[in-house]
Amino acid sequence: MNDLKPFIYGVLAILVIYGTRSFVFRSKIDAIPSIGCLGVFYLGAFRFLRHGEEMVQEGYKKYNGVIFKVPFLSRWGFVATGPALVKEIFHTPDDILSLNEAMHDALQVDLTLGPEIREDPHHIQSALAHFTRTLGRSFPEMRDEVICAFDDILGASEKDWKPVPVLSTIMPIVSRVSNRLFVGSRLCRDPEFLKFSMQHTVDVVVAGRLIGFLPNFLRPVFGPLISSRKRNMRQAMKMLGPLVTDRMAMHEEHGTDWAGKPSDLISSLLEIAQPNQRNVYSIVQRILIVILAAIHTSSITFGSVLLDLATYQHYIQPLREEVESVVEKYGWTKAALNNMHKIDSFIRESQRMNGLNCLASARMVVHPDGFRFSDGTFLPRGSIVNVPIRAIHHDSEFHPEPEVFDALRSYNMDSSTSDLNPESRTSKHRLVTTEPTHLSFGHGKHACPGRFFAAAELKAMLAHIVMNYDVKLEIEGVRPPDQVFEIFRVPDPKAKVCFRKRKV
Image (cartoon, rainbow, N blue to C red; front, side, top):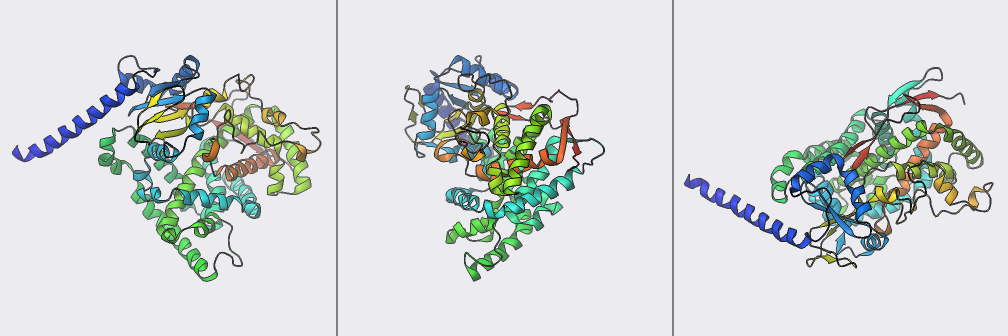
């Protein structure tokens, strides 16, 4: 028994410290109104798992213009409402409100992706900016992979309708198209790598949420048991390591420009890398992070787009006519995508109606003294404040008739002097344009750096579908309801869309 005394005292000390910190934290935030917590915090937190979207909407209506809080399992979550407070979130310096720290907390990055990511968070952002500038050159590869992936994975015919499950069909297509421009044609079509890239995405997201449910002091203990980081990195090094090694050798021999150099993510990462980042492990690790971001969000987004297309079929012909007209003028090029304004508007409206999260643009208070908003609300260090993205997207003050799916909403908002000249249209409400009232890609200096690639990919896939397939719901006119869990909304994994190849 004596041998256990140090262990017992240690556990008690941790509990006392954690309890004291929790008490002090609660005393500072008691004045902030709350939703869904009727005396017992965890009853509200478990309710939030099933009804988080409804609770945030309730708070938005009841406390619009101020900050309210909702109970997550591991802590209170704070929600800023009203244009003034939302603007403060986007414009407060990073050493006070940090997007990176909030993202690290959401995905438990140290445990799911590796603590090395903290060393230089700007490497990936700089590489994505460089990668974006090459999209014009690499678009033919994207187009080729869209064609091949849909043919291989859908296998639809001109004769019969073929029902396919939306999410499990779209995810491998998105994975192939994304990885074609990340790591090249050989790996993107390799069944083992395709399976790994999709599983890695699921592993990180699920592990991050599960670890996040634990109290802070238990995360280092149980986090490594939940996370599959080490196993995934070993597998990634096995598949990606030789490719990165070869490319590094070419980079060392020929510099940043040589005949046949691929315009892919590996090239961008190597070109931007500092000397301490130019090693196989670091490059592979960063490829995995980009794969995670690209496949997870784009698959869910395009799953919703596909369901909306099958639900609102009267938009198919106008979209088809636009694609035909633009491709006739520009061919299948990046310039053609830039002029597919109705395609752009359809995806943007689908994002608005059925976005992935009800809370987004999270920031963690990292200043030692906490942060006080302009309305006097004080948040202690370690607090995480969010923007109620779904409530804003469904607010009639910003979006007339917000519950109506109007695929040409943004298209009509950008109307110029003549619809006959697409190039004369404005670009204030495009898919990649961020606004305080349209936050699918965030806003401000931390708007998603990969949104230009994501938009090109989503538009290329939708344009390909309307030109080459007819689509309809399995039960016509009945869009399967999305599944909602905590702050997330995703298409029902069982939802199906029927495809039939067009005679073109």
